Length: 171
Image (cartoon, rainbow, N blue to C red; front, side, top):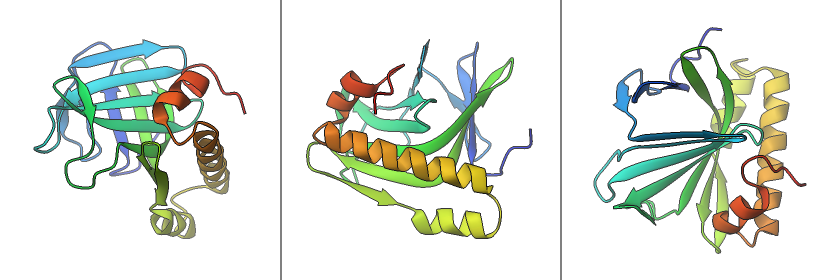
């Protein structure tokens, strides 16, 4: 399968590295695979926190990123959100897990509000046929189901994880 340039992160299944969307190698400090969840921890992208944790829920089509400082989740140092949620498509082969960013993102401010962003980027990808109609439908459905489930979780990602995370998809 051809990878969409600048959209796909590759996570090596057996080694402590991956290939980022920018096609650069990155170190993986921790990789955990459970039914319905892929979790990885890697060094931070910028100052203000020590690690970046990403929890990927393939059945929900989401990847949740959290800034972590010395083992404790913290707000993003510049943008002040608690969690950044990418709508994703996930597949794998013998060596790698592939996580493709599907353009739409949700910023979560714990127990306060959420903000759906990059819809114009998603619309451009649809218009230029970088995203098929089937993929577009799935992304929009996953976005709506996730946002609805966050509302039912009192806008708390911690509550969402207990209620819906891993192999659960109670709608």
